Image 1 (cartoon, chains in turn red, yellow):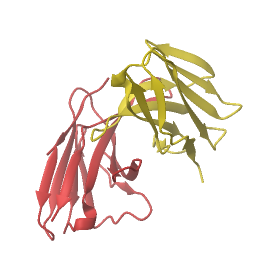
Image 2: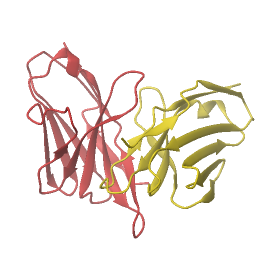
Image 3: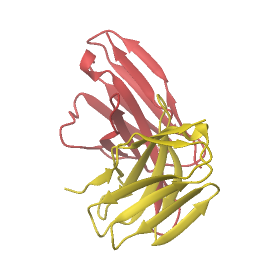
Image 4: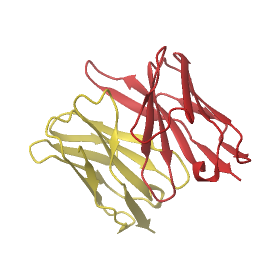
Length: 118
Length: 112
């Protein structure tokens, strides 16, 4: 399968600071990437869809001014958590969509970034 | 509301047995169906994709899709302790721009 990397794998920050998470597709070009958040014992929650060269599409209830997404190239999307607070502590995972057929796409996930806000 | 439902489990099977994981979805026009495996503290890993009715086999894994019943399953033959994980069913609904809708996951434990 396609390889997606994330950096950093974990980060601890103080309340009020901003944190940037990078998501890269290593061996393919990804026009579409997705950002998810996962709290303990829960399933993945889609936060936003990131499209190269255009604004991200955010899911209902996700603050676009707090979670800034930039998809400036076909291999890189970034998520910036601005003015992070303890309730933002979570496991953030990106994925990239790869076309596998005429009408089919598969999503491959990065390893995730564990954010802890003190 | 387009939904994906899974038995949350936990499901325990002895080593060597067949583990059967089930998933139902709400939209009859759904296109693509996936099974992901997620180990504790790790991100999901794609293990199977299926797009048409019937069975699809890959090694010890078999995915089964029945669109008329809106049902997709995953069978794991000769289960190993290393198969112990949470298995997530995911569906791409029509008109969803490649977005996945996930079920809540089924936690599988394979007992040695």
